[in-house]
Length: 275
Ligand SMILES: [Fe+2]
Image (cartoon, rainbow, N blue to C red; front, side, top):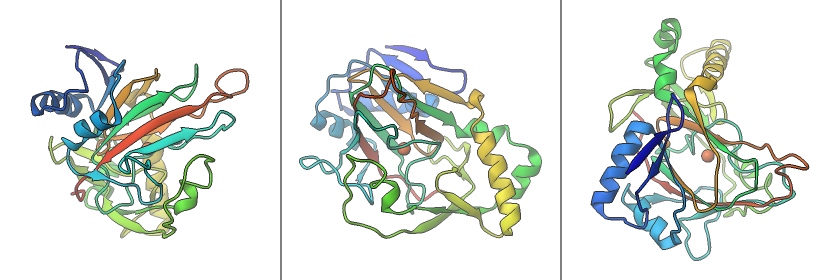
């Protein structure tokens, strides 16, 4: 096995592991690496949808998206499609998946099916580092606070993207989670807000909440907390959705990435109630 660190902050590319192998021994190795590096990348993994599902199930029960339909034959796999002429793609701008749910996703396993020759890299950011490096003044203000996360509604996940199909749910809802959560497996503190879904810190007035959230959002985007993965076809990314933010870059410009389809298969594993 070979581990190549992607950046100084997080992420590792792993060679010598076959993701077809969903034995508990193989999963243990992968999970230990995941807790250490927070996001893992595997290239040239010619796995089937069943094999992707089998390995994903080792992390825990699978979760279905509240707004987007899964694949016909594999409802637990959500196919993310960017059509060739689309500039936008699903998952743009910094966020952590479904933080508006009572139990936000634990781990995501994303497999590339079709990748443009250039553009559409995915970036990740380390929220343990973001917490450690936050000013003490802000830490004192947020340590015992909760924040509201809102689901934004189906339109944000379906209407904005030509090939994404809704499941008929149009309800919008919110849940609150600690601003600083403790990782259930490592015991480390994590800054758990994101600019896409977090709307307000509870028990603070509107102005102070806005001020602190804007400060944190800017801090979370520091490039020295990030790593960036350039996709190839048949690659798999597995990330810890509790301790990271991510975004798919929408750098599809004419004469370069625009004009190419991008297709990914996403499986989400159910998380716990953040503490
Ligand atoms: Fe996402």
